[in-house]
Image (tube, rainbow, N blue to C red; front, top):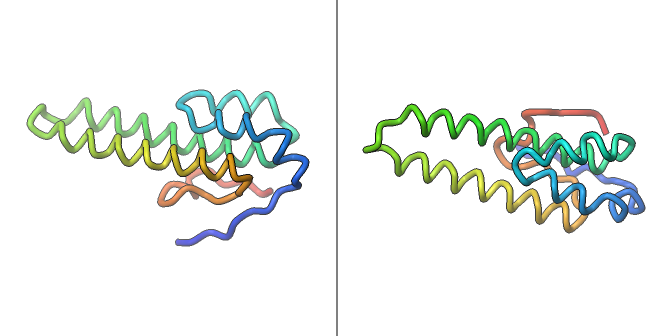
Length: 111
């Protein structure tokens, strides 16, 4: 499921790049969501960060439920979450509007 890249106004990208990066750091996705309400670029990355946050909470729950003997599975899941966060941060720094692999369609919005 390969989603097309969303193209944003270059002035919007430059103005809100830092907020877009913050969106991928755990609960900090709320900052661009509320601080840059009028920015399609910041909102896009905030929603991607929200999807990552929901997946991270899900991984925490799965890790909590798993017995200690399967704790390696929880660590592998966290590595996946970390990899997705890094991909999102790289996309935000480069000014791209690419959805995260696998979970990017969790929260969709029209841009």
